[in-house]
Image 1 (cartoon, rainbow, N blue to C red):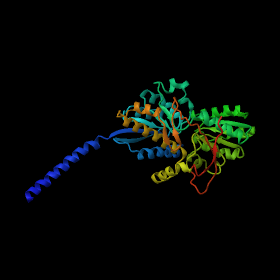
Image 2: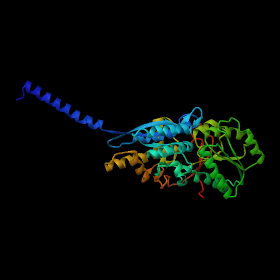
Image 3: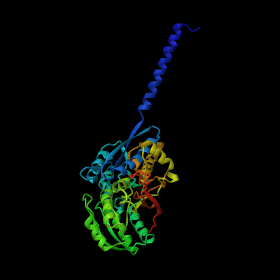
Image 4: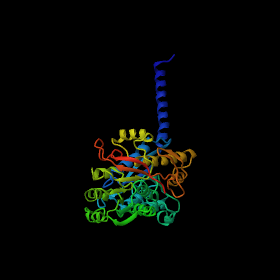
Length: 410
């Protein structure tokens, strides 16, 4: 028979057992290991709209990740400054030093801009901290000919989920020649690492294709008036212009080019394929511009449909294609951590770098793997043309452009 006193003893015993069980569970929860992943992009200034949509692609993947025993802490960094009006290489270097000084950082996503990448890469190399950029395309950073400058410690640490301007610039030159039948062109750049590099590669291929290059000028991104150079271009009457650079100069260039050379074919690289450009330039200035991205086009396509729905639900706006390459960059890092965790080895920046180098990951854009220098093995370049859509927000780059197709490869 159970008496009131014995029942009290039983209840007390059960409470003690429950307390003991709770104590046993607590250390297991507390033992969850925290690793940090930095996201370095241009989150204020001229390219902020695109930068934040890229960031949100990476955030979505990292928030959705489930890795037994591990918690990923997302740490965003802004490499733009008010003085620069956009990305600032000095700020990018400062951000890199902050990450490498904290051993909890095991990987990074970014940067958005190649000029920032050139500033960060040597610092990341010395600390063996890998980064995967979803949008920076200057080939020098991963070119073994520049290894002493950008990876002084030896191993590749700069990986990409986009291809480089060794393909992006030349392939649009092919499109100019083969599809648009351009016979003459004037080339412009914005003096940045990305802009100069992609304009150089475009110009070289244009000349190979028989397009006559009538001249080349460098624009000051902080200048407000490009009328003098555009008037000079008007007098030369080229079939087309090509601009290498990002939004800070592109917005002003598009507005003034519409006034001075409205009928001239106009185009550029992925520095134009951003809501900052379509919103900043406005209609009709951006309408008709050709632009490329260094990846397959997935936004609005079936392969990116579920991603787009989840992105809009989480952040309240539409993604862009580099939101997807950022999502895929995060998937590669998540896969690396999972792979290391299964081996029982500690997740460190060194082991993550090695796992990224060997990665073969199924992503939204297809299989992602890297060559011995960190470059993406897929070299797809997609071509778009600005087409004003009054039913879409001006900063919705997918809504304000028409997808033309994959550019002809050299």
